[in-house]
Length: 274
Image (tube, rainbow, N blue to C red; front, side, top):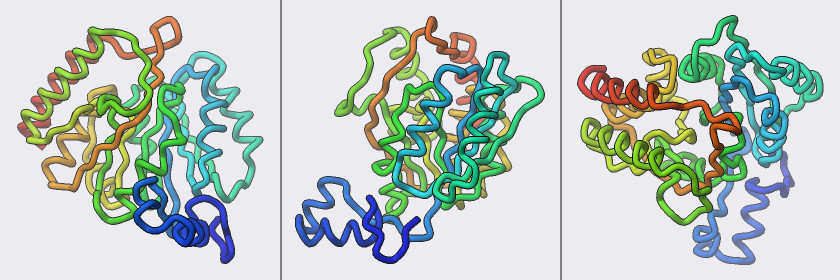
């Protein structure tokens, strides 16, 4: 993607041009930086019954001006998602900037299992988890990648609760549940995260190589499990504010109170034992 003379966003030439016009300090404040020419981002996308959102989500991911590998894992969807995925596969073809990897579970195993499958197939320099439901905006990838690319962080969490990005107002009890689970997790990990349950978790390649084969949870319990494992290994963890456009249950939101109870058990389980 980044050839000599390339002036597309985040290329070295693009950044040099901006730096000459704005200065290095302004570029840092605005979040401008250069991405290495040979860099590839792996975007792991667990998919279950997302026939209405999968195609627009893939288009949004493709529109991010970074070389990517899209790892789509269909967790045995029961709607028209498999047909949509077939059409996307046929349309993308051999796009060198958006290489497509597709995995399909024969039975429904859960989001955690889909994430684990995606991690096993991901080959990029940085690995990012993206839900297929349009609640999270792929346009924010460059902000999330920056601390890792610049050598400051090994892991970045995109927080919905840091407060300076647009956030759809929805369920009060969900908000309290998220804050409770994050606080409980922090008690066991000694981290000061604001949003442990966020979808946007971004990992340097070596982090995935270390924790990926150890992950066991198949449902939403994978969120506290991943957090406990990166905390125990003393990886450098950053948080970045992100926008959030949450769905209602009528729109297809899947997480429920049973998942909250499971998360509590996982926080204690993986907080005490690896």
